[in-house]
Image 1 (spheres, rainbow, N blue to C red):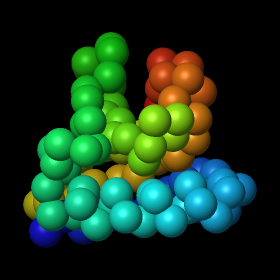
Image 2 (image 1 turned 180 degrees about the vertical axis):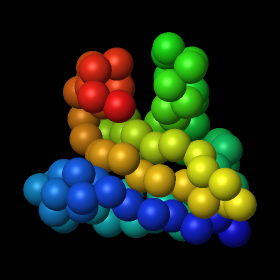
Image 3 (image 1 turned 135 degrees about the vertical axis):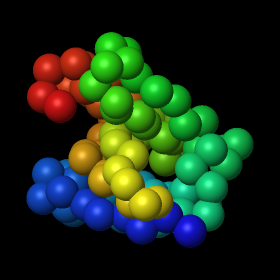
Image 4 (image 1 turned 90 degrees about the vertical axis):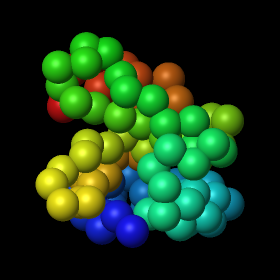
Length: 93
């Protein structure tokens, strides 16, 4: 099982999500902790690959941006709409 660490950015963005999306995110996180490549997560490595950024699907419209750490630790960087995640992945992280 993977240990998940969250950033303040993630906590802030998560708190602003509709409750229905928060519930979906919690469900997907359970799958993620067991297997980050569980099929419904659609986990993918983002470009540029040197940044080591990954994302997984909360639902069709929302994604979680994260990084793998050491010893089965993962850091959730932020959460938000699909298009927004891909735009900020190239700028902020």
